Length: 281
Image 1 (spheres, one colour):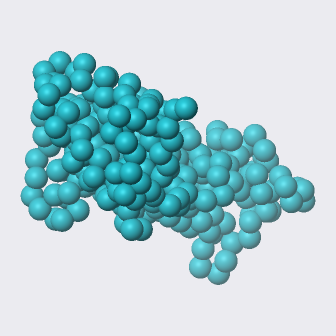
Image 2: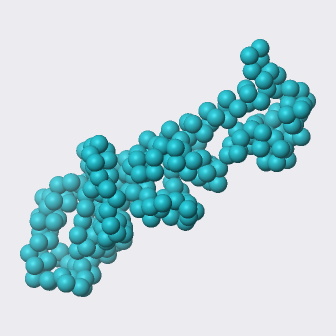
Image 3: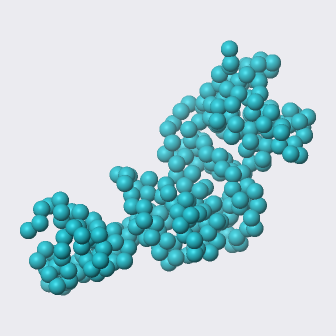
């Protein structure tokens, strides 16, 4: 009888083989661990009154992939809608076979899915759009699990002298993700989740903020100016330098920008995007 650790590694290799139990026994990783085939498998796994040894093993193998597909469908419902359930299941099976989870929590299972869709799923129709959706839906998962910090209030910003605003370093909350995409995916995600009919949009620059506020996850479309400003602040730039980057965007009117930023910061402070404000000495 093999050692217990050998049996455990053999079962793991067998259950995670995307080609099935028979393929795993014949030429998969399992056959490199223990030399069992369909002819002698009963020496290790006994049949039941109703099922053969192979059928019993297949139940567990199918349950493994079914559960992971279920988890991924919960995290990426819009990607599943775009691809269809059957194709989505095939894609997820290939993804988890290539990149098996190494974390104890299934919340980390989909971390590499956007990159997989963009780089590996080369035969997938609407691949770039599917990858863009997956980026946003993964960001929603990350934001939901991000550390909780106390946001600063609008009054904190209002108390800073106007002449010192250029020297402020505003720290964004951990539960904020900013994304620049090549598709306007936000309206599509909303339509799918609200069960409205919608079509795949044409490529166009899109800027999205995903954040958590009052224990809920929000998605907001941004224009190029707001995105540039928030991104610079998130990188640690002082406000003056961030505004200069924003004003340098082609087509931006510096005078109009100056008149709008006050309202932007009031809105962002009310939604809790900043957790600290420091002044350069």
